[in-house]
Image (cartoon, rainbow, N blue to C red; front, top):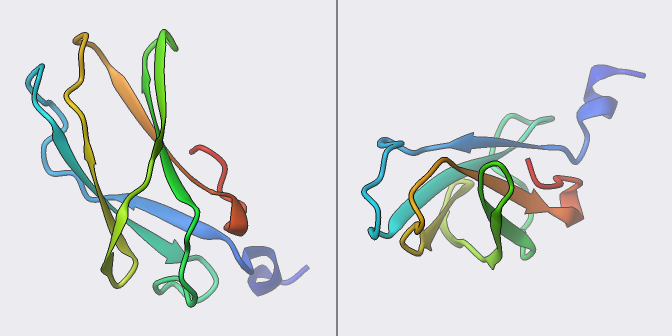
Length: 103
């Protein structure tokens, strides 16, 4: 299989977060870029099923169903509610139409 065929339709996720530590009870503006791995540019068609999952580690609290809005050039943004209780949170991106499952 050629490299281009292997990457066809696949998306890369690049987080554009400047500050990774957030005060408790403060909402977070999360920005990230989706990249078409075959062309190394923004996805060629609109993605309507991008979803975020927020998970308090070690898996004690999960919030699913945050839908980011498009900024352009593959960049998306979501406002996440205040993280309570305090702790380490992982944020996963999903886009089933392009084969990206909670990563």
